[in-house]
Amino acid sequence: MSVRETALAALYTRLGAALAARNPAPKVLRNETVPQRLPAGGLVVVRDGETVEETAILSPLAWAVEHRAEVEVVTATGALLDALLVDIASAVAGDRTLGGAVEWAQPGAPSFDDAEAEGAAAARAASAPVTLFFTVAGSPLA
Image 1 (cartoon, rainbow, N blue to C red):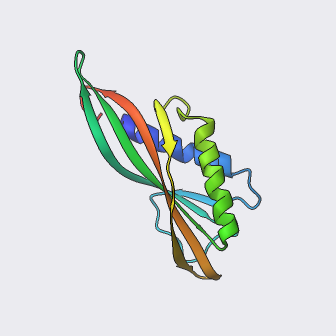
Image 2 (cartoon, one colour):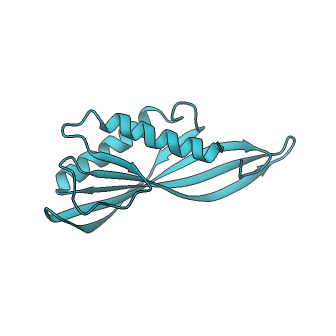
C-alpha cells in the first residue's frame, strides 16, 4: 500500500471513529456518491483529493509530499453542519499524525453550498480540505 493510500485510509478511519460518538452518528463514507436520502446524523464523505506539491529531498532521494483530501459534509440543518465541521477539525487536531500515517495533518477552512436531498427541505453542504504532509522514499508514487 502506498504512503498516500495509508494516509487517506488513516484520515477516513480517524473521522469515522471520532464521529461515531455523536447521537445520531453521521454516515461516514470514502469516495462514494452522495445518496438521495440523508441520514439523520448527516453525511460525511472523505474524497481522495489531489497532490498539490512534491519536493525532492536529495541524499538519499525522498519526496516531501503535500496532499489535499476533501471532506464533504451534507446535513439537513446549518446547526448540524457547523457541529460536524467543528468535530472534524477537533478529530484531526487531536491526532495530527493520524496514528503515525503522516507527519502532519492540517484542516482548512470550508466552503459552503446548498444541496438537494430527499427528505430534507433545504440541505446544507460544506467541503473542507485536509492537507496531509508526508515523506516517501524514492518516488512520489510510493
